[in-house]
Amino acid sequence: MTAAPACPLCDADGGTLIWRGAHLRVIRADEAGFPAFYRVIWNAHAAEFSDLTPSQRQHCMEAVALVEQALREQLAPAKVNLASLGNVVPHLHWHVIARYEWDSHFPAPVWAPPQRACDGAHEAAVAAHLPALHGLMRERLQQWAGQAAG
Image (cartoon, rainbow, N blue to C red; front, side, top):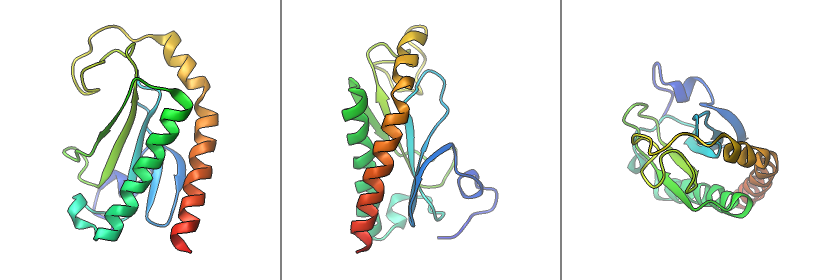
């Protein structure tokens, strides 16, 4: 599991870096209409979840759960979507997306056609909470990483 040629997730963070650990990182993706769209990205190039060892898979999913918990606590979304697709970028990453009944695609997936226009006021209200959310994510991920290493 090393860097793959011309892999955008090997060459760059893949979004706004929130936290980086020895094995994975958490970024906020710039996805219009979805102010709380995150990715948990495995640092080393791996195309599939089954490329990881059992302990690495457990490590990855614990990080996904920590990000989801922080989203739920800080933003109270109607739902949190989790997805690992990799069809466009075959580098292991999990999407962790806070969803709201007012978002342009709800209840359909974020990749489906929109159901309604974007709601800029609600999006701005969520965005105002992101600094506190990011601080909580960093704190919990760093604490967890310290415990996992020790």
